[in-house]
Amino acid sequence: MEFQPLAQRARLLFHVQALSRLVFFWVPVTVAGALGATFAVSSFTALVGAITWLSFLFMMAIWYPTLAFERWGYLLRDDDLVIQRGVLWRIVTAIPTHRIQHVDTRQGPFEQLLGLARVQIYTASGMGADGIIPGLDLDDAEELRDELVQLLEAEDDGV
Figure 1: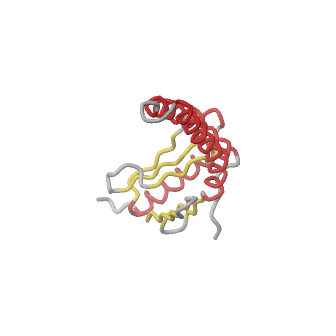
Figure 2: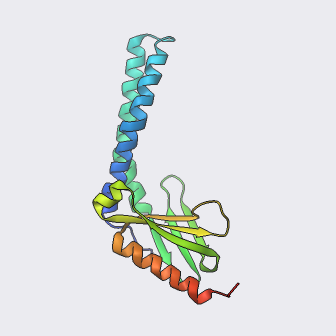
Figure 3: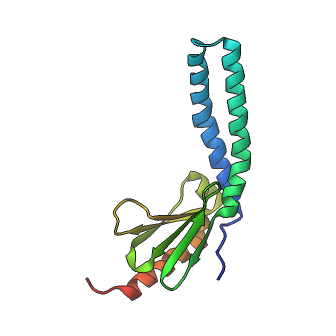
């Protein structure tokens, strides 16, 4: 069997999310750091450092989401759901279907604009979502959620 990829629009979603983090988090943090650094180094050095750092972060926001998109995949087998992801570190998570408590589909603002959704899988661990599959077409996300719920109902032991 072959891993299912994310929807092609998820690549755009990953880029929009990365650029949003850059603009709304990293730019203000870098500006504040550069202003603080002027007490230790010259203003010119702080400015060059900030511009260099933001240039690096911009390149990462362009390059990294494409790699992240290409590394995501999921595979629903008879006894488990396998999720693979990771750019620098490869992460493969197998969630036994008999351990699943409930499944959600969610859409943030960018996902709604792009017609995408993410599936969140919860197990008995109580530590939050144990598996998340982002960037699925809304119909595919709902179909996967329904398939997982059917597997849960089939394995229900009545306890």
